[in-house]
Every structure is written in C-alpha cells, then in structure tokens.
Image 1 (spheres, one colour):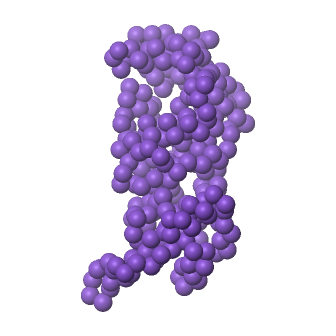
Image 2 (tube, rainbow, N blue to C red):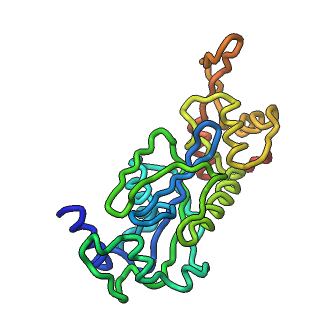
Length: 263
C-alpha cells in the first residue's frame, strides 16, 4: 500500500481502527543553548503551525497512544510523558470541525477524494494533552503526506497556532512548572553529565524566574538528587568546573513518590 493509499484509507475508513471525536496532542519540549524550545509541525497546505498529535485506537490505552504518537513524531522510544489537560471547552471545539477545516489540512483534491459531511474526522473533537521532555539533539522528525515540515521554536516566540493549540502550549508550560516543584523532571533535558550552571540555567528557563546560584544546588543535594563526579569539563584557562549526574536510584524514587522543592 502506497502512502497515498494509506492516507485515503485513513480519511475514509479510519473510524474502523480509531476512535472518532477523540484525539491526543503532544507538547514536545527540548532544551538547547539555555533556551526551552517546543517542537511544532506545519500541515501540508496550511500556513499555521500546530502541535503534533493523532487519534487513539479503539482498544489502545491512552498512555500507550501517547507513547506511540510521541515516538512516531520524534523517532525516540520511552520518552518521559505526562498527561496535563483535556481540551473541549474552546469555541473551536464547541462549534465543531468543519469540512473546510479538514480540506485545508489534508488537501483532498490532491488525494482524489471528496470529504462528506458525515466523515468520522469531522464534528466536535476532544483532545487529551500530554507533554514530553526530550533530548533536543536526538529528535529526528519524519514528515509524511499530511505534515510538510517541522521546526523547533523558542518557547517565548511561539506564533499564532492552529485551532486552540496556543492554549495547549500555555497549559503545558504551567503544568511543567508546577511539576518541577514535585518531580525532578530536568534529567530528560540535560546530557548525562552536566555542570551546576547548566542545571541552574535549565530550571531558570523552565520556571521563567531567577534562582539563587548558591542555594539552588544545595537544595538538590539535600534531596539526594545529584552526584558529584571526579571529572571536570575544560572550558578555558582557569575554568574547569566539576561535572555532576543525577543519582539514578533517588531520581527514580522521586519521580514515583514526589518531592517538595522550595526554590
């Protein structure tokens, strides 16, 4: 089956495999050059950007669907994923997706099909939001018949997005910032070995606030989250800071049981 044949089958008969009116969107966050970034895609034939996402299979647990969609988007398996909100109250979702909305996204003329008003992709759409934290350099996005291109955007430069996706990005960031106080999720955005300034800048970028350079690492050490290594990173003359890593056992325990980080 060709890619076009698969796309046509999905549009016309996808309801046999996927749930109608329920989808999942992922806010995929990375960190690069001391800047939090978000991965956005642009659908073929559409000017606005949006979050990657997709439908949920009939017999598929939601968490499995989230992992599948995130892996299909990034090329990375086993990502750190957290559900953060269900979206169904915005005017876009209350007033339903129209034939014109769908035609702009999938360009049916190019596929040789006509969208009918009772198509399973039309009508009111409820979306479950997940956020994922990824290693920026490991992501490899594959475009397809529906997705024309992708791009990493600085989180403070996100443009006007499709539908209610700006609301999704805002809610995802609010949730990440709340979770930072109760889970050590920063390991998913840093290399295995890092300096104290690097983790300090990461938390400042995620929280969008300044943190005390001396007290912040002390609190991480008090929680048993960091190990100091005997290795240094040579930066320049008289600049060879020590490297650190997350304490794996304490990190996994903190993810499972939670922490209270006062910063």
